Length: 252
Ligand SMILES: [Fe+2]
Image (cartoon, rainbow, N blue to C red; front, side, top):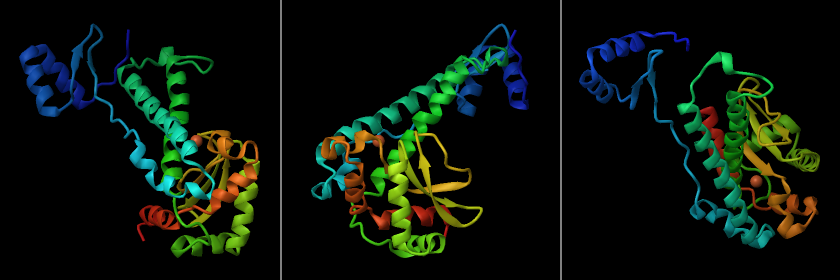
């Protein structure tokens, strides 16, 4: 039998359920809890999951403007399909979690439904967020950083050129991503390597710049010459967008 820890609201719902369906309907409308069903074990609520926005061609318009710098329209359009895939899978997993019966006895670290959903959720939602930042922060002028992010880069790396050297080297050493994170604990930035959509950044950092170095980001244009892609990428970073993300992160 399922185990339920009843909150005050659950207890109220159970009481209303015992009073009959009309009362349940009223409560459902009043609380906005959505579908409420009765089982032999008790009251089970199914809440509609919050879904993420699925990007469209509109969201790569800025990136397309700088296609002449080397990362082509074909690459960006193909890449959009992958970005949409992360959004759609995030939503699919959120729906599956909302409908799943949570039973600790069925959780298993080797294989279980909760493990399959949550491990892949980190990959799907991580991939979604990484690409949100990637496409938001390209399509710009490139060149030296400006504004507050320039100050933070100088504080952490000594100079913009030293940061560039670190960023490019990290890009060659990564299997998937390089992330520029603002660490709220140290109030500094750091360039993390990410081998997959969900690896290696530390907690309490906000992602302000993300460079995709998976081959799908450059193979059409540069074959396996990743260094050439990174060079092209550096020339279209949108530092205004990075500063906007930083400002949102710090509230300053
Ligand atoms: Fe990608």
